[in-house]
Image (cartoon, rainbow, N blue to C red; front, side, top):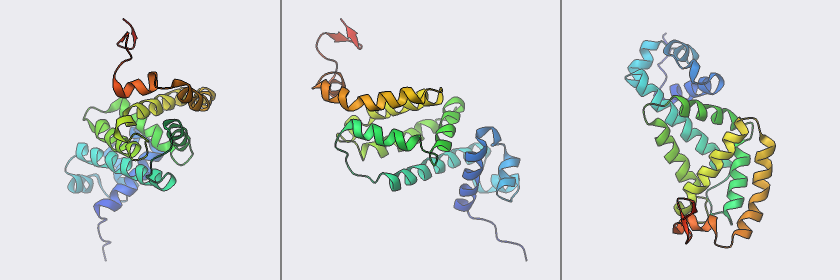
Length: 196
């Protein structure tokens, strides 16, 4: 008796596991199909095209990561942006999330379809649900976290540790300065981030 064809979600879960282990370099149709015990033609049947398969797969991975992050850091406003950055950067650097971060950089280096922007929106909404200022501060925090991940990936985890450790002092000493001004425009006397 032939075994039943896997449903789309089961396929995406298996494909996600493969891509997390092997990266996007291993994302050609035959290795993907082999990883879930099907043929490349069946993948096209289920998803329509390789491009649609990859877009669905990357969105599935982003949602799966967000669900895992939800479990580790439930949606509730944090007391400060510094605490949020410290908590999220620690999660992003954990063994459970590190494969997603490697994949995220793969996506950013190869995306020509706009999938990266869609995934970024998922993460931005995730951060906004925890940010003390909600959506108003989420973009700034996302930029800081992404910068920390680039520094980590470049091989300077000690620098990331120092930056994260300095944030509570930086935010406390800011007293409505540069970090707060991002919400209200540039401080008087500055243009494009520098003196006029």
